[in-house]
Image (cartoon, rainbow, N blue to C red; front, top):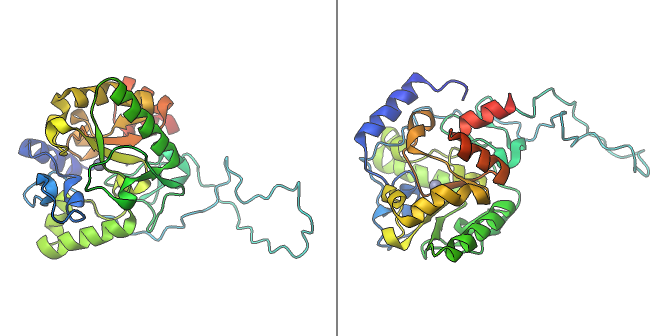
Length: 301
Ligand SMILES: [Zn+2]
């Protein structure tokens, strides 16, 4: 992540030029799970080259839970209460000097960052990553979102519930359209697209498994009746979209993919995609008006 590749920048520029074909980054992903639905975004726009995920992740076998010595003494059993330590099979793996603050390790997201975890086109989640505390968010969802797609990590679920309550109180009508997506789901989805359009094409509009922020359980797409609950950039012009842009941070969410960040994130403007990072950080990101990548790099320095 340190240095956005030239390739990426080029692609992002290309995408920007291609312009207004909005609703897709999430869309194609939405598509397959809603068979007979009418929403326009259910067709994977093969011609929507916004998402250039050019940098495929080589799935580095991730030693996912490597105990990091720093702040979280996961492995160092506190000596306090150990009854008969005798036969206790102490399989203490040696603590590595892996910086807990690192945003990534060999292209893999540092899950220890918890709600600040960074996942993007360059940084993938560990293969098979499953968020620890998924719960169903008790908010209004569009009908096409069901099951785990209504789930978020606990903290994020509570936050979106509060956000939705705040929105409602302000006369703002919003619904969730898609929250959690599992690794397996993304695999299946992506493979379908590859089978249909070929990998190169599929990479342009769908996130390869492990690269979707939705897999963290910290991201949710929302939309409003005023745009037919579509994932479209025109949401930004509605009062609901404006309300989100102005207020989401006070509930701990950022509008992750801003127009001004396209070159850096590689994603088109997505006024509907909210990422939970907690009120303090979301407020800081909002004020600084920078991509999450830049914010975290600075924070972890
Ligand atoms: Zn999204």
